[in-house]
Image 1 (cartoon, one colour):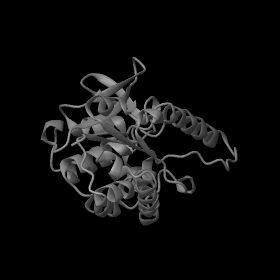
Image 2: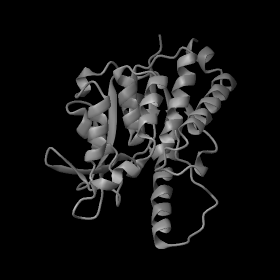
Image 3: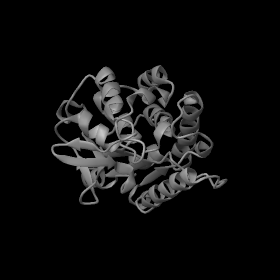
Length: 256
């Protein structure tokens, strides 16, 4: 039996599309030997690695609805505290360490001092997820074991490398496409655009390391910080994955 690894990109609320992709892969009978993720992909990967199904995770997400619940968490710097991510994970995850997960998980974060990607795979799971999801400008950097970290997607939004080493086949899912209908109305939008372009670039430089690469079309119309269209984004991921599984004969190729 070939070992299959799953890699999930960051993408904020758009990460919901990963759940549609996972649902389609579940229905095709795929079982994952390892999961790697960045930011939103790391959070979804953690829930799945613990044993939740795609349907169970989507039910949890629907309880959140929108990232507006972050607003009361302003720090003295005027940025948001990542504690809200910790509270979400503490409330819904049944485990606290990587070692307790049913499937090996790799979480990418950006080490602020060295400017390198840090891959977490052991120890405190919630702190690793907080570090991986710490979007610059929006959140304060996360301090973990005396070091500062920000969003893993800044340097590696598709952390293929850990599962490439341990798995025979790697499936990647990218849910943070660039919207080409961009209007530079203000400096804030330009800054956000520059960040997204940089993140997208490091995804495509790694997509070739995947044996199969899913990139659901149509997600660019949904806001990164808005969970009000959960069902729509889930459906986009599911339909695209179903098409690709059949078109690329993924199940047949895995069995040869």
